[in-house]
View (cartoon, rainbow, N blue to C red):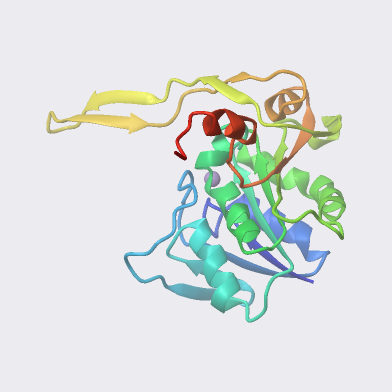
Length: 248
Ligand code: MN
């Protein structure tokens, strides 16, 4: 079994090393990851300049592009064979609720999904990335349970690990996405030349996280597993919009 590992924190990130190590027991692992931090690059694809891949050591490439670029290059050229699975992460930080729309980690798995390859994105829902290696045993047990035969098509799994000691994890919850209700992330300031700037980021997420959501599970000390698909169609609204008579 050929497993492609990628991420959005860059090929040197500790979380990626843990993911690759957890996957190593399941097949041949090949890492193709960005050469630098690419968090929150979402599903962007580099089309206006060339991309370069460098073999860092056997089985590890870095690419001067986004996670989506990495998956495209890996599958199209670098691996020499189509991977059976794509694993993305372990992201240094949560990817819950609307975060999945901005996340480079989740986008890596989405790109695999578009290419028809089953994929799992894994994120650690805390800022203390030093704890991620302690999740190796848990992840080594969880991955083969997720990467099962007959994995549904056009689906990826989005996993979030709670920011607690893995020994205290209560179990696994299958969840839906929570909703972000408020995050104070826009900072306005003056640069050293007196020019105004804006800076997006930081802040603390506030969640609308009823029972059954990813954020609720993580806050309660569970590993969250959310099945995602890429069809953004609002199926429930199709008939209503048809009734508007737009089609003449
Ligand atoms: Mn990241």
